[in-house]
Structures are given as structure tokens and as C-alpha cells.
Image 1 (cartoon, one colour):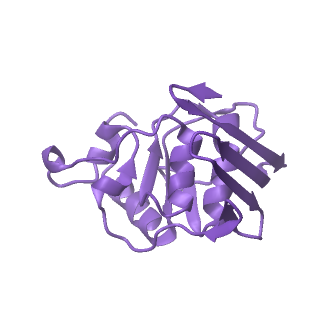
Image 2 (tube, rainbow, N blue to C red; image 1 turned 30 degrees about the vertical axis):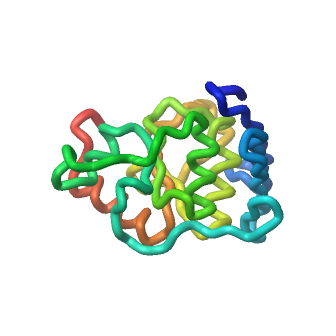
Length: 170
């Protein structure tokens, strides 16, 4: 896949509905993310993990601005992390702790998500639908709705936030 100046290769092996092996290579930044179910995540052969905590630092969040703004009590005062052109790389930034949270605005497909999902999971993060429901792959319908990835505690806080304050368009 090539998006703007971001060339990226994202590959996953999915067994049933779950990714079990994942690799994402970003040649522009010379980063190789790799994960095997139950064995952790590495970036360039070094273990990585998602950022811990529950706080919302909007400069460390990426995704569609109208969605991220819904987390703030004063949305006019937030500045998001600069746009990351590749969804898979944006999600990998959660896995390596470079971002606290990342959102996908919907219409992403299995092949956009499966590798990054396992990479986040194996880095002690969570990636789910905004409702908190697990993402299933190899379904008849390969398109997914709004998704969120973050470290486990922050992810739980974000999912709870949207449970109590649903999106007006969902």
C-alpha cells in the first residue's frame, strides 16, 4: 500500500477470526513491527509496549478529529498529533507507546487492520470497535466501523466514555 509519502507493507496470518502472526514494515522510517500471538511485539527486534495510564493527552492521540474531540470537555482547545497517513502505522504507534490512542473512522477493511490489531494486542494494548466489541476477521463482510486502539486501561476509559456519551451518528 502507498499512501502519500508513506509506503508500507502490512501482512497478517489469520486463523479463524483472529490474527496469529503479523508484520508491518515502514521503509521510510526503517521500522519493522512483528508479533506472534502469545509472544509479544517487537519493533526492529526490540520489545515494545503500549503506553500505560488513563489520561487523555490529545497531542498523543491520532485519528479523525471530530471523533477525538468527543473525548474533550472543551473540544476547541485540543491539538491532535499530526496526521499519520497510514492507518496500520498509526495503530503501530500505539503499540510502541508513541501514541496514547488511535482511532479509525470506519470503512477500514480486514487487510488494513489485522496485522496492526495483533501488534497492538501483543504490546499489551487493546484494539476494538468503539463499543468495546472484539474485531473479527474472515467474515463475509470485511468492512469495519469506528475502532479504537490504546493501552488497556486507557482503552477501557475511552470505551466507557463512548458508552455513556454515544456518538450522535452511530
